[in-house]
Length: 267
Image (cartoon, rainbow, N blue to C red; front, side):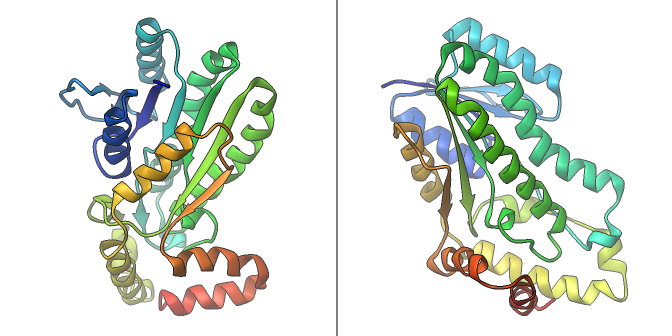
């Protein structure tokens, strides 16, 4: 059945791959991006910063006026800032949490009234393996994804009675533009204690990301959730090792998990 789908962060990576796949399947796709992009016959691109509620309201109103409904919202927009938690600036924290977490909240609050009125819809929120375990030197990225996890669990409970399904997608390492666009804390790089450790950890992080899965893999998982009548609340999309790490975290003590993460990232 043809559905009206809104995807944030649709200019690259997961968002672009998902938009293209869903459009190819015959769905009506609106891709939201911070910068203006030329639309095509399959995807309508809309310029919108998910941190700006007025922009979101205007775009959602335009879509509703044209289509009469929004069936699926995919909250994919996100970014990463690397560095020591201690040295993160207020601006860096606000940008990280404002884009990843509040961007998701802003979009949900704009779209949900229309879904609730229709008594149906799907919300698909992009979390991360980093939203299941706190990754060293990506602490506020992890914090933003942990926040999405808690928000989505509560939202799923609140929306169940209105016929609205909520799903979390938890990707592991993928080869996307995310690696190249990560912002790294200059204060951390310059610090005599943190600098050498951060550079060592960052090299491991980037190697894993660059050797990761292709975004089309995640796009296919999103498409399955879109088309599934009763999608799961959580779906880990990662290589076998990373899938196992999620399972292992549930059975180990906190100190044991911290030791594993320190060893893995050489932190």
